[in-house]
Length: 107
Image (cartoon, rainbow, N blue to C red; front, side, top):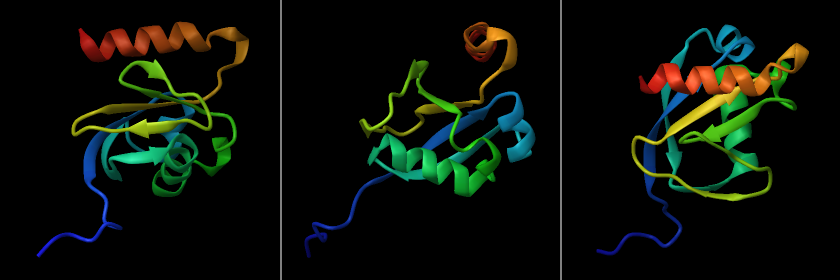
């Protein structure tokens, strides 16, 4: 029996939370089962609902495997991909924190 054309492959990804996102989610990292193909806006919506991020919902940035995800783009996820949730920071330290965070994860 063939699978339905409406069914979509699911992949398990690792989600990393930084700064205020970590505080709101209550964890520094978690796993999430997502469709292998989805829009970046749908990903953000899922992160907001799954991890209680509504306070920063309109302003956080998402990175996929160390690359920023632009709004309104189509994503192709693979098993064990890493998604980072990065809230805005005051004082212009956003990119500095991002670089430090990724270095910590991969060293």
